[in-house]
Length: 207
Image 1: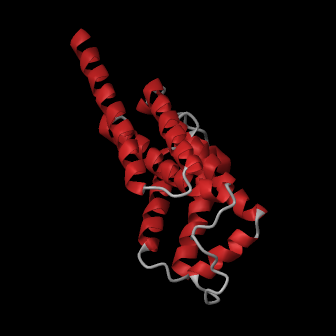
Image 2: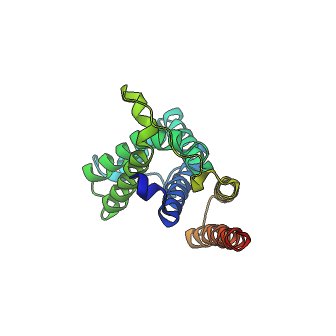
């Protein structure tokens, strides 16, 4: 694991995995915080035990529906900041585990594949930070190297940009275009990647 952690591309994979998971949760949580349904119309007449009826019941709880949204927002924000990513991974684990169990308990089509991959990705983040998180189960603390790529200011700034755009776009738009959202996020992430490549190239040429 220590050797993997020293590889630039592997570190980038972890950074962008955090952006992806965190961004997805921020994108999905705003509608809950705003007190709105996932669907355009009421699903009160949906069959008992169906996914739509389940979400209608959650929506009707009011405060609990918004509480779920705030929890997702907080976990997503921590993940995207990079600086607080360990806390984000810990907070997000019970949330995504709960979502995964829900999707395999009802008829959600191919959704369990997506939630299963998100759960696996979150477990990967826990494993990545295990040296530091193991103290939670009374095992010796193993600090990470201070030279980790995630500690570069560029990634924290990129995370804040992605968070700000995602949250702002969902707050201002009850009806959204997921392709537009993903496209802008992709361009922000690509710009950060190219900037970092230029920085590394300049650093190598100076040495």
